[in-house]
Image 1: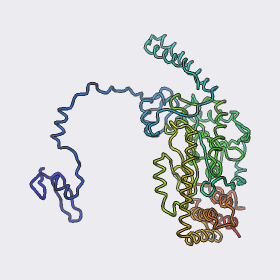
Image 2: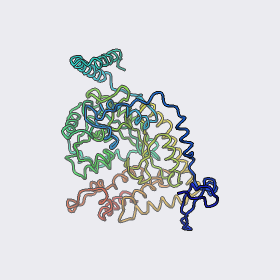
Image 3: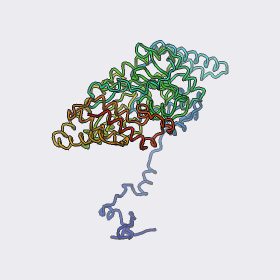
Image 4: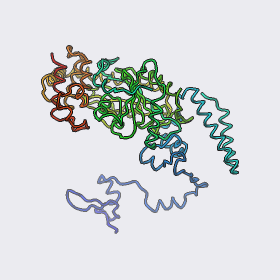
Length: 167
Length: 368
């Protein structure tokens, strides 16, 4: 359909119904702006095509991030979080860390790490010891099942842990 | 942590602390510091089975959390309490609406003075609060953190090196602290300045809520202002901002609005205050909303020195005692009471017997 503007011969871009007069209004871009219509500032299709054709191919496409579908500890999913706003267990923070980064930053005015109190030394030590124990267990399992890449990363984490002191 | 007791017997009375009014009481009704904590190694409440929830209850109940002042923590199992008692706890600001309405295993531990309380199995395993009259956020913080330290010495709390204290809802993560003040702002409402306050609060990442927190309306011109950010700002910095800037500014703003009202429409203001008192002193039926509205005006009248024969504490106590569950406790009927349906949300608020009882109570309390 190629309706002409009511006021000139140009093709109409704005099509409205005047509710008061009960008539259809067709206006070209210029006359629509003159009549006070909000005309979207979108470029004509041809321009867009040109831009698309001349656009540089991105040298590297963003790598698809592998998202865990469920938390290994509690089985809660990120879809469930989207629905309820609640995570299933403390480990969900690791399981969904990629997605949560943005969620937390948005709700916390861009903040990305904790400042303030941490549990007393004694219980923090308990935490670290428990973490170390579980990493060692995992490392043993990884070596036994010949998952050397995983074993290496676990060893790195253990080294980092050892160099960290409790605040 | 405590003896299990029939604390609700005690809740029947409203202790003398209800009438205490703290610093800046003309505007600041109460101050609260609340911490959310979760036990590590267990799913959050929303993902926990009833068995796991009971495990949490058991664990928390057996922790030696008694301090110097809160040794008399009383444990109330909400599954074993009556709807009336639960509603009573809610009206006392000791449990949230969500907690009141839930049906899963949950409990609240309350210190003898009712200033410290811990909800177990609300959204997080533990939500502990200290609620004090007037502007006393520093003391509330001091006391809640003292309790938190005892908790951490005895339990393994879920923390993360980057995110801090872990909470079921990531919007609370970090310090997991909520500071809030309950403000009486009739001046700002009468001068139509509340919208500006809301906008400013929004810009400062503060939440403005009604008398009973999330989702409640601002009956009686009470507004609860609290922080929304919990990450990247330490508790002490946040506290300093609240005590040093935010609250004083709102208080000053409200006082200015009251000054303007007196300056420009003293007679109108006096008329409203005295009419409110007149209604409260003579009504034979009082709906909840109506009583809150008039009590608010009387409170304003006292704060402005327009009414000198009524203690602020009396009005403060009435705000609580006109609530449905409290009305039943304070003024039980001799025979009919047992025949009444359990207190449910809205139905009871306006039934005729309740309105009559409320009017009787208020009339007696404010009689000349």
